[in-house]
Image (cartoon, rainbow, N blue to C red; front, side, top):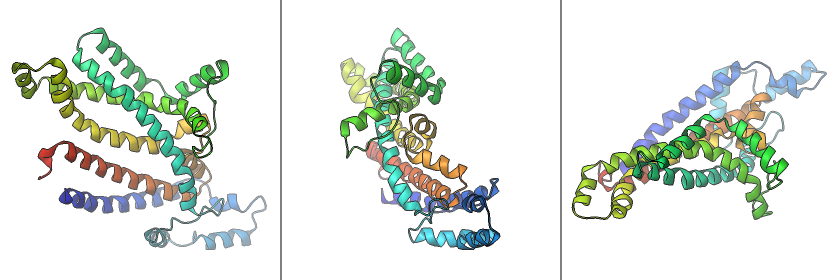
Length: 314
């Protein structure tokens, strides 16, 4: 177990360095100058020069990158060029919002996708499998923004059952917070549950055709015991890793859903930073996303090893 952690950490360090170099260099190619937007309409040359000197934009690119790396190593992600607020403060304020959305979406995805995958595998060739495959195909084909707009029109405007947009922290009103996040989490869960259903079905079909399952049936074990005790425990091992990866995608890829439902989360912060040429915020967010993916991958590997004892000593 310790060797696995060390190997992953050894790979993680150069990965983070490479990601930071790519983001720092590629965003400089974006058209537009953030200093011109900060200076206002008059754009006094003295003010422009002062801002460039303040944020070290006149320095060569390697010098800017090295200065930023030294700041990051000390836990300082810099200051927003637009609001002059520390990037760590912006991220710490927005991250819990997206985390709540991602947790709720993953909860519904697991609740829907894994049982459907099990039923589709156990009842292969039946109407249940056809319905599960139809659901998975629809979930992977329907765009999130279209489904979100449709739910707002039906559930919020016509039926007036749930709020159409906005966000309420759980600390202020837990029930209203859950109601506000219910529709966007279901929108995100449609795609994730579709992927979970397909992978669970494939893993269960492979497990049900394995030799140990045939042996269990030959010994007289009931179908319930064969499915839940023997096949499912082995089929869920790759699903554990998949769930951690999909959770990372939820944290990083909920941009459109947050925009549609007016949720002030991580994705909206990133989109606003890109449009405003706020380099420090973009760099900090992408670096946090990369670090989060690496951490989730490590957690997924550890869970996989815990579920499969045969890998603990490799």
